[in-house]
Image (cartoon, rainbow over all chains, first blue to last red):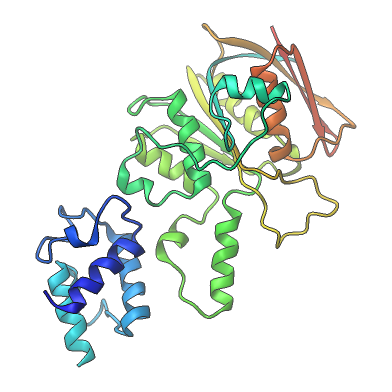
Length: 85
Length: 242
């Protein structure tokens, strides 16, 4: 598991106040939305803001395949790592 | 003109005051509010709970004592200031040039708690949100009585207010209590329960706005007291136990 994935799991738990979920218990390949953690569209916006703050990476709904980027922690980490390199 | 009505069930919460017994002791001067967190919620789904402010949790707690999910019921929510602390936080964020939290922004309107209630309870009945200003407890109750007289069998009335942040001027105003407070009343025109008569009056009393009137009203419900008069800004309200 990449460092970004580990950081992201903590960011998701803290940003979205998922009090009952341990960051380590989040499966990198599990769907974040539609099942999995059961997040919704407001959560996606909130995560977008947190990712901009923490990584200076902007997810552009016009340009990027948002559904694919937010499909799992692994996909999100991959997008952030490639945007920063 | 007196308007009779029935309180089928009621519940009130302030820090450390959770049961009707607690409020009786509070009315008798034996139990001041302390610094307890809001109690855990029973019916509100977890994904919604994480978005609730402490005040929203208090409001949902009193609702949960009066209503079970799936019971369709029109509702009136009355709050002097709503979740004004959250709005102030966002204005401070904007001033610091920070991005607003979409979650905080989406729940920053005066009817946010009422909206969360309608989702948690799958309640499709009408809901009115009142900001009663100087009117105190009266406008919310008048709205609820209006719904009953329009033909609804029962109406849920929810009062809630938080402590005004220090940022707002307190001098010359009687608009805030030192502790948050919420109460829910399940009202009807007939049937079993606590029978009351409500009369709007003119009044020279200066009991302050809703946050200050609410504990007095809860004490009246909990204690062995037959009448309550409250007034503010020239408008008065009178409740009588029948």
